[in-house]
Image (cartoon, rainbow, N blue to C red; front, side, top):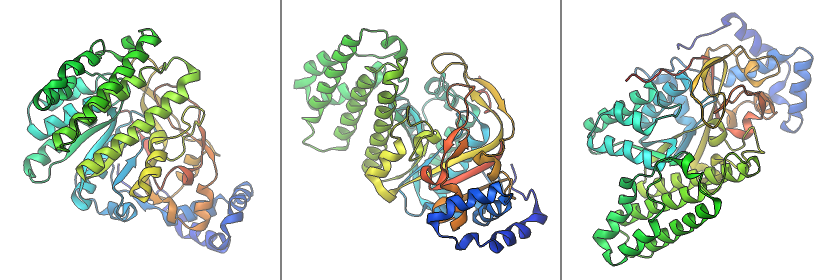
Length: 453
């Protein structure tokens, strides 16, 4: 989608009005009220003008071609080692293709090496094995690892194929794919074998004990079926998975790369078993479930970054990459917040907003099929309504360094639409400046492309 001016003739007028109103000179402490008063008095043009002054137009959302329009984004990212790139829906073409476009740019210009997805650790390793070896078929592997997810789409096959082609041409600095999540995992015998195989080769004396601890847990083929086990049984299995992790860790004296990976894979099994002691159908435990999940995602990313030394682009929903979610009762602490705690300025959060279009979601969060839904243009009073009046079709801005009046507006919580695994969903209050370091706004999106068989 090409970036272009929607109201070219108004830009000079808008900026002039903003400057004449003295918006950029107003102290931050009183700015929020001043902006709201201006909007009620018909002064929204001044807000749009200062937002436009901070905005950088996007020429495209499709990957490939010139990326000169992303140079300012590179400067905004700076030396960050992990960049969270959100999505306002779980299934829109432009969000997915823009992620590939940004990732390619960061690979080529800033040395990023890993694309991380809100996907189980075990599934991410399968995709990464393909990227490193070329064994198998990208489409088949995507079908198997992304099944029943919103990412089981052509856009992600395209990303995987590009990453594999890059690795063929750059064997000296290969790209990696990681899954940082524990949601809906499949821990098959081959994944358990990543742990037991290491122990068999290096510490055979403890293999019988390890196999004993994993008995009854190995494999986890269906997470929802596993949740049907009595809670006491799931808690006992989780305790045994933790003992297995401690057993592997206790043999870590050699400090070899293979040992580190075996320990991390054992940790993933323990994380998953603990996660599955929580019941997603129980609303009272949902906050604990989501907080644990986001903390684990942050821990896995931090481990990967420290272990590989590479820079990571993290793809997840806005409510995961941001510092504050739009639903604190459900997401009391986000992945982005955990990462900021542990990495400081080495983590940077980028959020997405959109004005209108179609996307994928479900009638019920648990179960059901991903299908197309559509929403119209944002209503007045929502963040997206004002953002869409900026004179660029698609654009991004550095929330941290926006002009004073723009940042004051961005600091105020307003209704904003973030869509996940269930629709319909109402907009919730979001203060953009409190959630993200950088914002990308798209005028319109459409549903992601169905995977071809």
